[in-house]
Every structure is written in C-alpha cells, then in structure tokens.
Length: 326
Ligand code: ADP
Ligand code: MG
Image (cartoon, rainbow, N blue to C red; front, top):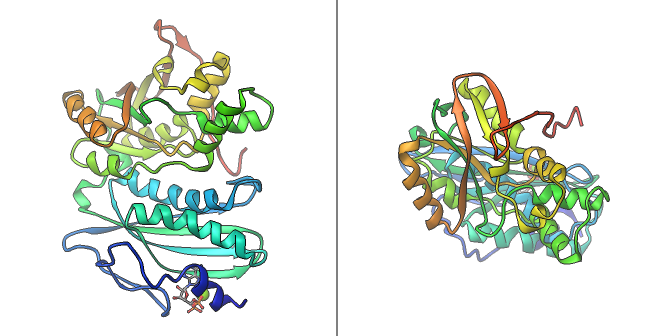
C-alpha cells in the first residue's frame, strides 16, 4: 500500500459524524481551509509523541490513538477553547493494517466525542512518532492564560469524582517495580496513564471564572510553577489535600507525594480563581460531572511552600519532568 492509499484508507473519512461547519476544505488538497466563528480567535497547539519517550511500546494502538489526540485536546481545555479540527503527522516504521485500524479507531472515537475534524497531516516512513496540531476557538479576552493568577486566589485541581491525580505516575512506578499494587488497581492506573480524558467541557465552563489555568502534563509542582512564573506570584500548597485515588491512598506516603506532586501525564486541569467565585467553580465542575479540589493559595511571596494536614512544613525536593534533564 502506498502513502496515498494509506491516507485514504485509514484517515480520509467520506462520512463524518462531526459538525463540519468550520471546515471549508478537509484532507486532499495542499491546505485545509478552516473558518472560526465570527469574533473568535483560533487557539492552536501541537504535541509530539515519540515511542519510549511519551508512550511505551506495549501500549495498545487504540489507546495510543486516543492518547495522541487527548494530550492535544488537553491544551485546548487548559485555555478554555472549543475544539474545531486537527492535523495528524505520522512517522511509521511500516504499514501494519491491524495496527492502523486500531489506532484510527481510538483516535476518531475521541475526535467524534469532541466534534473535532481531521483536516490534514503528513505521512512518512520512520521510527514511530505521532505529531498532532489541534485548532480550537475562543473569544480572545476569555482565554485562560497562565499569567492571570492573583494573590489570594484558590488553587484547584480537577479529577474524577471517585479518584484523584498521580495515578499515571503510579502506573509507571509499578511498571518499574518501584510500587506494588493489585492487578485490578494496576489496570485502573494504567488506563489513566494510557487513556487520559481531556477536560474540555470544564475548561470552557471556567472561561468566566478562573483567573489562570494549565493542564497537568509534567507534574503538579512543575506545571503550577509555570502559572506562578507567568503571574509573578508564589503559592502555599497543602500536600495532604491533593486528591488521590483509592489505589494511590494505599501506597506509602513517599510514593503518594511523589506521584501527586511530581507525577505527570494526568491531563487534569490546575487553575486559580478568586475565593468569591468558589460556588461558581463548584457548579461548573458539577455540570461537567467532575470534582475540583482546592489544594492551596496564591501568594505574593515568590516560591512554593508545602505543608501537610497538620500545618507542618514539608520540604520541597520534587521536580517535574524535563526532556533534557530527566
Ligand atoms: P503535500 O505533498 O502537499 O504535503 P501530502 O501528499 O503530504 O501533501 O498529503 C496529501 C493530502 O493528505 C493533504 O491534504 C494532507 O493534508 C493529507 N494527509 C497526509 N497525511 C495525512 C495523515 N496522516 N492524516 C491526515 N491527512 C493526511
Ligand atoms: Mg506532505
């Protein structure tokens, strides 16, 4: 199968259940044509996924298709933007029909859920690498930037009602034999690592409420650090208030803290909002069938101070993921 047959077969869909009103021209020409709604700015983000660096070779292709788009949609969510379309650039060692079918299945299931249309891409032979660019829209004055946090704001993280953050890292630590859990618990944490849910609806619901937001991809303290730097603020965090799944709660405290504070790959939102908007924050989360938990406060004093539930100082030796340091 040649390159063009490959694109037609797996990625050029003749019938698409998504709303194509923004897509004036899709796959097949030299460019796609995309029209955001009047008055909206385009929100654009790219994420690349490399085998063994961003995902393990053992990941099922359907989950990989999902994850590749999910991490990109998560960036739109963190900005409060509504997804419109995406491009897909693929380097594949060979065309394996079963693999491609499953990859496309996972990819399009999530795309359809968000009415996000595949409008183009590029394909080449090479070591497995997936690069997606997403296009969303948002009124520019409502975009949730990193720079808007104010002293006194609450700091929240989103999470599933019965769970928390840090599970993706727990799965990784379990694979590395640094943590131990039951087969059932492991499968649940593995699923959170391999099939994250981008919090698109929550991001949009927070447009008029949050002062800043970022998605959790490299670890809580590192990602919060980006908000603090952009906002020129500091923060206090109560480490024991960071929500944890049952599986993570069963781990030794050191593992719990490692996973929640410097784990990555959660793709939850961390955001700030004035205390006066607490009720609005909770209502927004409730409408999205999600929980949001306050974990600390923005302060004028630079740096991050960690406390446990008793108010004792916890030393901050946690660092987040950095491709050129780790
Ligand atoms: P060009 O040579 O002009 O870059 P290509 O031959 O790479 O065009 O691609 C032909 C068409 O197929 C273009 O519309 C391109 O956007 C689309 N395309 C290529 N690869 C992919 C892919 N992996 N997924 C979706 N569309 C793709
Ligand atoms: Mg090309």
